[in-house]
Image (cartoon, rainbow, N blue to C red; front, side, top):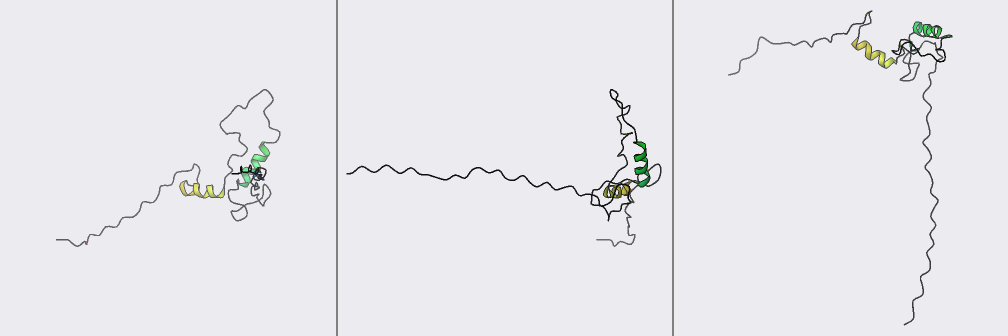
Length: 126
């Protein structure tokens, strides 16, 4: 019996590893209005933060030339000096108005109790 020939080496083409493309970053939706312009839920994208015009104007004026000197630290850490204070979304404002009154000071609204109607003319079961 003749010896079997040696098997031929097998050559495989292995594709070079490829990295998946990073997901495309979507730019956050931009408000269609310039800062300080009147906004309504119909004119701005959802979750856009807005502030009442008088608050926005006051905040712009109050931050001009204000900074904490180097080597010093702010006197308050409790959000009193936050220039974005009072900014809100229209959705959050609607939720707040369902719970709180629009008076000063605000008061918690008491939910209306459901009316219970009882009949005095019930039929007796025997």
